[in-house]
Image (cartoon, rainbow, N blue to C red):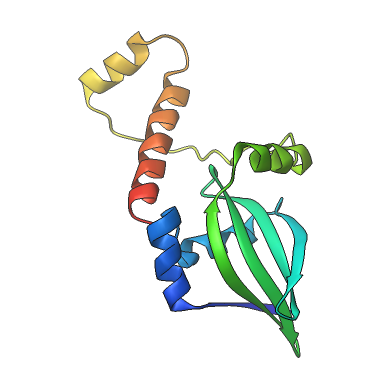
Amino acid sequence: MSREFEWDEAKNTSNQKKHKISFETALHVFKDPFLLSKQDRFESGEYRWQAIGVIDGQIVLLVAHTATFEDTTEIIRIISARKATAQEKREYEHVRNPYYKPVKKSTTVRIDADVMQWLKSQGKGYQTRMNKILREAMLEELKNHP
């Protein structure tokens, strides 16, 4: 079965202004293998759903949507998207696999000597520290340019 996404572009623009999340970004929540989806309510003749999941390994989003089927295609219409609240994150973490960790990739990186010296001077775990700094920079960039 294939899956397609649709939305109202005016709602997308409004959502970006209000929540700083575009629907183009929000659709990635459906790639989360631990996605938590629950029926929210019945409105305007259709069931509304809430999906909570992670994008980019860190950002937990709640996406309100509907789902319909045409032949062998599931059509998901995104209604709104925002960062999950603390309570919603706890619900998500409760059902998510507690043993899941983002995949690490071994690579060679050329770092300025003074930067490497500083990283190592901070104590054990300089590679973990470097990853944390890079992840924070990545998330900040994603937040500012969804």
